[in-house]
Length: 581
Image (cartoon, rainbow, N blue to C red):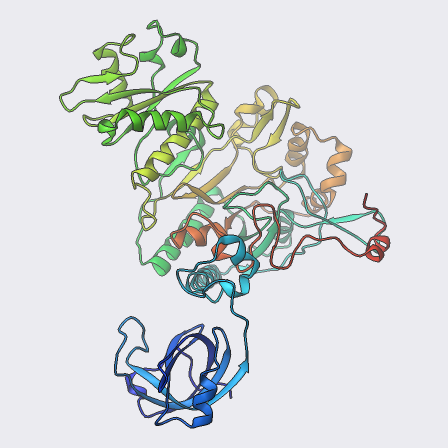
C-alpha cells in the first residue's frame, strides 16, 4: 500500500495516528537541524517534518537530497503543527517522518508548479502534464468532470439513453471542412471524422430509441481562435415524438439544473427572442443580455440633414453607453481608432455627450440641432450623463461593427460579471442563407432542419424568408447549444435537397442511407447539442476553453507536447496509396 491517506484529508483529529503518504515534493525548507517538506497530490498538501533530534539519521540525510517534483513515499506520525497554516485544510498538523522512500527523482521543472506560475502559455502547453499538477488547471478538469456527471444524471433521470456512435464515417457537407482518414483496406477511399453525430442520432430515432444522448467528441478542420479547438465535445441529444416546445423545456431544465447544482444559482427566466429581433437589437444572434446598450436605429432622425455620410448610408444606428458622458477626447479618439481596426472595419464614428443639464454636445453639431440629438437620445434610451456612439453604413456590416463595440465597452465598464448568468433562447432562424459568391443557398444549420410549416410555400417564391424550426441557447453572449426539429419524411427532405442545389444523384450519394431509412417509418423528431467545452468554461467564469481541456491544441491546431500533426513513415504512406509531394 503506497498510502493510507491522501495529502488533503489529515487534520487535528488524526494526531498520534501512524500514516503512509505518497506524492510530489512541492518545496522544502532546510534549516540545518530541521527540514520541512510540502508533499502534494491531487487532494492537497501536507507538511512533513524531518527533525535531527527525532528522525533516524539516514532518513534525515536522505531528506536533504529531495528536489522539487521528486516522487516520494513517507511513513510517520501525525503531530500538532507549531506554526499553523489556516489557509489549507491540513494546516493544523504535520507528519514526523520515520521512513522515506524516493520512488522517482525529477528534473527541475521548466516552470514553477504553483497557482501563480512563471511559465508562459507556450512552455506550459509543451509540458502540459506538469501544468495539470497546478491547482488552476487541475481544478478546471475536476470542474469539467462535475458538470459532465450532472448532465448524465439529469438526462438519465429523464429516461435518456446514452448511445455511442462511430467516429469513422462518411464525409458529408456540413459547413466546415472534414478531417479525413485514408482506408488501407479500401484503396483510394476515405473515412471522415464526424463534425457531429447528426445523421446517426436521427437513425437512432428511426430505430425507436426515443430519447438519446451522448457526450461525444466532434471534429472540424477550421480556422481556430481562443474558444475553438479542432476537436471539441458536445452534449448531443435527440428525442422522438416531440415539438419545439418539448425540447426547449427539457434543455431549459438542464441549464437550470446545472446553474443550481454547480453554481448554487436559481434562474427563473429564459427569455425567448427571434433571430430578427436579436440582429436588429444587438447586432448578433448570441446577445449578452447581462447589460443594456440596445441598438437605436436613427435613420428617421439622422438622414436628410445635410450630413452626407449618414444620407448615403443604408443604416444609421447607435448605442447609449451608461455613465460615459464624462469621457475625455482622448478616450473617445481611442474608441474611434478601435472601431477603425481591420478586425472591426468601421470608417469612423459619431458621438453625442448627454450633459447632466439635458443638453447635448456632439461631433456633428454643425448638422444637427438639440431637438435632433434629443430624438437620438430617445431612440437609444440615453440618459443624462451617458454617451451615444453612432455608426453608419451597410446594414448587416454596421450592426456587426456596433455589436463588437458594445461588447468591448461592456468589458471595459465591468458589465460582464462572470458570476452573473443570463440565459435566453433565440428562435426563428432563417432556414437558408445566400452565398453571394456562388449565388446558391446553403442551410444555415444543416440540411435536415425542418422549415416552419407555415413558411413552406415561400420555398418556391422567396427562399430567403423561410424560417427554420430551429433554436439556440445563449448564455452570457455565447452560443452554448443549438438544434432544430428535423425533417422526418422523404418528400420534404428531397425538396430541401433541391433548394440547396443538390441533384438527385448527389443527394442519394451523400444521404441515401438516411433517405432509405425514412421510408421505414421515421417518427417526428428533433434535438439539440450543447458545446460542453464552452458551457464548462462559462460556468467556470472563463471566456476561453483551453484550461478546461486536458490536452488542448494551439491556435495552429498543433499539439506541441507530442508534436502532432507530424509526418508519417514512407511505408505507411505506401500502404495507404498516398504520395506526399
